[in-house]
Amino acid sequence: MINKSFEKAKEQSKLLENDLYKNPQKYRVLTGDRPTGNLHLGHYFGSIINRLKLQSLGIETYILIADYQVLTDRNVFNEISKFTYELTLDYLACGLDPENYKTHIFPHSHIPELNQLTIPFLTLVSSSELNKNPTVKEEITASGLSNINAGMYIYPVHQAADILFCKSNVVPVGKDQLPHIELTRKIAKRFNTKFNKNIFTEPVAFFTDTPTILGLDGIQKMSKSRNNSIMIKSTADETAKLIKSAKTDSSRYISYDPENRPEVSNLLKLASLCSDKSPTDIADKIGDQGSGKLKQLTEEAINTYFEPIRKKRIELEKNKDYVRDILLKGISKARETAIGTLSEVTEAMNMKI
Image (cartoon, rainbow, N blue to C red; front, side, top):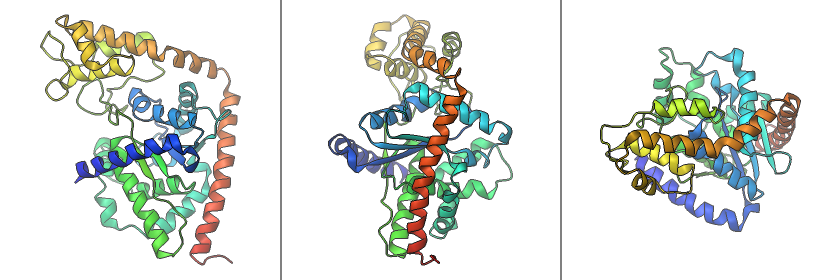
């Protein structure tokens, strides 16, 4: 069922991509990340590059830092502010540019109207639908928590408020986030039907060509919590050390075979993403030179690709006031938008005084 949903979503994404270039003025984007640390290569190739593409088209883009969501499965509240700053640095270093484009970066804890939207949205979703969400199940397992708080179950509804408050119709995501988009589409449709008002559009998931990036174990998706990731901000030496520790297999001859050789193929894919060569071409070049050569080429490709991004990040670290100003401007714009949407919602529900 999930695979069928994903295939259908990929078709929608491809159709959307074609129209984005023709009619960018029709679209508005909402996307974001949790402030649990720095972004890694999976974030970059799975989502950030799409955000840059959409930004370059002149499409208004709301980039949300989901700080409330961190409280559902992590006891790191002492570091949320720090992580919000670090995440913003990563965004700006990668090229997201609120000064020259219609890009707004903000933490959702500073937008109280989102919480007000969440309450009516909760009445449109059954407890069964929340319990069945595969992404929530996966995150509960990954958290290792034995006592699951209610916030973990209902955050997909809060995420729907994040998406719908700005009437976003495009959401760049990885494959694992598709269930959240599907729930958001249901909530938008159910609200419009129940209150007989066409307030919300049903957003479409927008995938990159690499919607799932595997970690250095070559098996699970890249994740900080699984300790299998390379951070965008990592130094060249740190990257080299991580690549050397990556899992491969016993065959000396290098070939691109994701199904039968996932670890080797994952390194080839990473090298390909950071160069203008296909995974197969890189494998053919290495031939029987073994995993040592594969790791060397992968390390060089990653470090070359991310060198300018890392340099820019170091410069941004020297200007904390600039980063804070970016966030304050993003909060101001997001609140303005959210207040307008909430006014429409309360009027539709006949709650105006």
